[in-house]
Image (cartoon, rainbow, N blue to C red; front, side, top):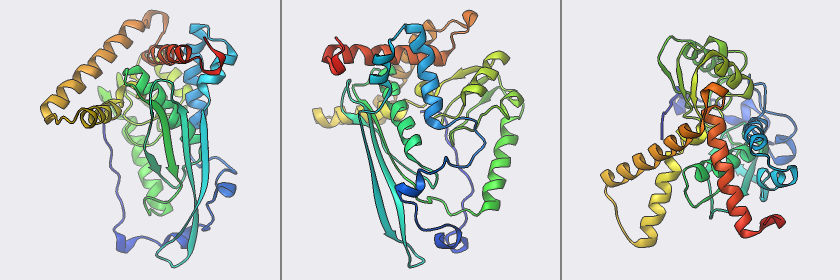
Length: 305
């Protein structure tokens, strides 16, 4: 997995109790009323859908079949009442989305963030489908989320972190790795990027509008479904070891991971065509979609055969 990111977190003694800053009701009824605040011009799911539709157009996939593989197979949304340290009961939203299981068991962790909503979890579940397919790992895509405040930062601290992020994006450098939140690179700041290579360590860090700006500038972008797929590959290795009652040492795991990532990159690079503006992202999605389509055909899911 490429990249990593840390941001300042207030000491526990300095944190403001959750109940003083926000209404305790973050249940599904309330949490899904409006999109989370932010500067990105498109939602997480809109972004993933755009990146899906571009290669789907190139592959000539019919609209009815697109709907089968683009939308989630199962979604669950629950209420989570919790008593916090302010002695009040706060009600949060819990989400679980199983996007596609045609290539294997559903795989995906849980995201804890105050702005998590069903739209974002849908997007992250879809990304896991395309990652596992691209790396040819026999898993499906899923994701969970809880909209709890994992970090108790006040508004001023959040603003300071955001302004730091924009300044870092505009620095003169060879390589930029956005590795924190989605929508970090958007239409408002993409043109300030001076790096020649962007490796997406986070999920959905670049909006479609920003992606087009970077393409026009000649910036090479290694997409998230390739660049940060190392974690799910190693998770697959753990699964294999458990099934076979084996134990690989760190060197063996790293060697196998390097081989898997290198093979996937070579396959994507071979499919990309920078002369005709077929980016690494489009090539990666095309490979992933074709593999999911083949599994769907073999299973006869949704009447597709």
